Length: 368
Image (cartoon, rainbow, N blue to C red; front, side):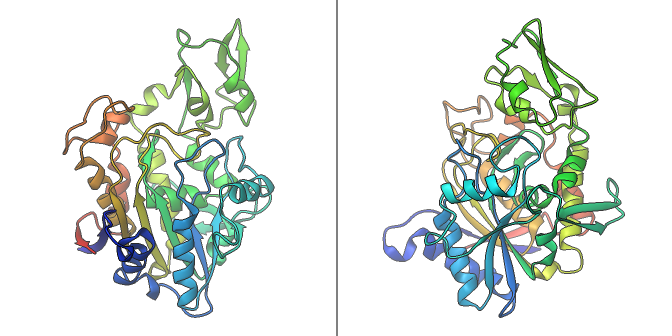
């Protein structure tokens, strides 16, 4: 049984402020033993899309960077470019967005390196020979780093139920072709009765797969790459994934297989920190954020990617949901909040990850 270390957000003195709690978790979880002096340590995070304010505060990352530096590591912040049209689809826009959101000196004392290069094509190909993928394609910097510190923001996700460490690492480090591979199972559909012909989805589609016909959006399935941008940006809720939302097993399992490939042969070089704060319904990739569905619950740290995701999901489900949010049902402590948000089995990723040896779903939660 793996250990997951937990700190709540209560503080009545300076010693209990968030940076100090991050420091205690870092040490207790043994994350300082995942790298050696002089190692290049990639601090994998999400810089947030412009218009979104729910992404992790750069001050949180600053503390992690300082902890790595104090132990002799050479940290850099990193993420891969996006598949969809936004402000992080290439390294130039991505770096500008990171800077605008505070991920720059002197707030965070580490450079930003975009893992898959200028246009998302700098990739490493790793053989995995698993159920969904024979190979995975990830940002080159993910594989060139000596160690990875995966710092995640827990939130909901329309394709995986929730996004934690596995979503951050697997999907987040996918190169452009890797992200395309993971999204191939997705087929968005337009609900004509709700579509108002505003054209937002047309402008945002990265593959120009949507056109307006008689003031209704129409998706060309042959051109569609399944990135889900249309669902996120539609202001009228006129796009969904139809029958695919009944079974998202394929994309969940592909994300897990990408994690497997990234960690293959160097599992002891990874540390995980997850912030269960500002738990919003959608990914930080959206150019907006909805209200948080539960109170801020705390911070987790572990060397087991499966255990930390299970513990984070359990913390949310064990708490009382907030009224006046997207969480219309399942508000009681113990109710499945992820199922209430997106009606499919979000545990597939955890079951599959455990079955291929990425970690354990059973964990010992240690309060720090």
